[in-house]
Length: 293
Ligand SMILES: [Zn+2]
Ligand SMILES: [Zn+2]
Image 1 (cartoon, helix red, strand yellow):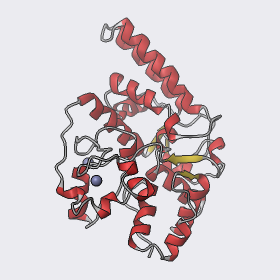
Image 2 (image 1 turned 90 degrees about the vertical axis):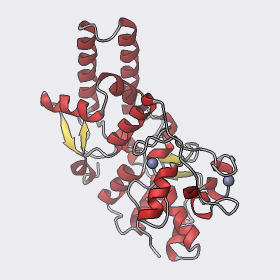
Image 3 (image 1 turned 120 degrees about the vertical axis):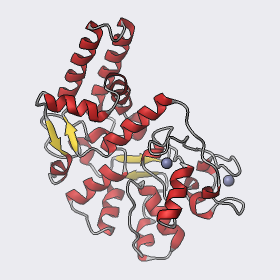
């Protein structure tokens, strides 16, 4: 039986739900060809085909909504016509690895049980420390037995959500509130970028932010030390355009731009507003997704 992929469900979760519910179904048999450690472009293409959207748009839609590639794609090059940078179009590129540990928000799991009857793993929770929806700490250890989730069971512990542990289930546990406001802001910006319907060209946006850093410094809003730290991170953000090493979640330079946006603008929406106010190069993500190269 083909299951419905859930909003921002990570692709690994989608596969593992098939294996858990019916390991012998035709879909499970096809998905078994995919490595349990990494997911390359060819694997994402296979998932798109099983979902009946094996075209360019269907592939890019999966990348944008269900992998962290959206963090890169929202900052395209000015000459880029397609959703993915050309070097990432190779089907051998690794878009996801289990090096990036999955995280659990107990409150999301509780909500899932009420709304869907089953929980699922979220894409964003691999890359941040706090759930941006509930302001709760994301768990990398089982809340029942304290074992690291990635060694908790088969396929890096993904069946914990459905199998439970020692007769108990995650939705029966208590969530932990986060008191670190900075981590919440970083997580919120990560979510905003991942859900953005607009892109802004990387070259333009880094110049635009640099001008705002200078303005805030001239007004005395930020110190010289802070200004230099921000400029350094902004320079590192330009490496989003580097495709030489192929995309890997553990090599993502968007962490730097998220840090800068958090301090200078407070949110991705405020940055976009300031870009739109000066008529900057903002494009629709959906339009780019239809273009092959
Ligand atoms: Zn949550
Ligand atoms: Zn456990």
